[in-house]
Length: 125
Image 1 (cartoon, rainbow, N blue to C red):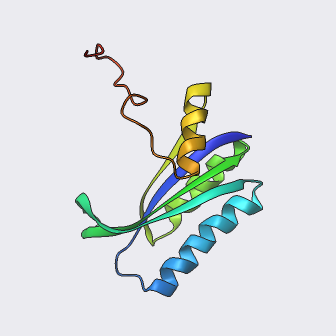
Image 2 (cartoon, helix red, strand yellow):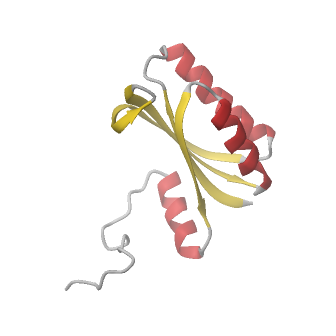
């Protein structure tokens, strides 16, 4: 079982019932394919950085889960063909440091600035 995070953005024109139905749909895909959902973080409706399919806003959700790697291809396929999903991103956490960060994020603990280091920049003191 690998550690993953999926962020997806739904159309802002959906009603609350439709949004909840799509969230349950995504959760059902995960559980039917052997995933263990750790946390679901509803982030609400936000302004997009740029227009996507004529929309300036979107309803964001993040789901932290553990799953076998074969599930990711199926999840990606279904999210691509779902009309209500305007964007999605799947992140895989691999090494010990990333998995520790996943554990904190999935339990709602924010990382301190010391833990988040830019990759190719020297440390400033």
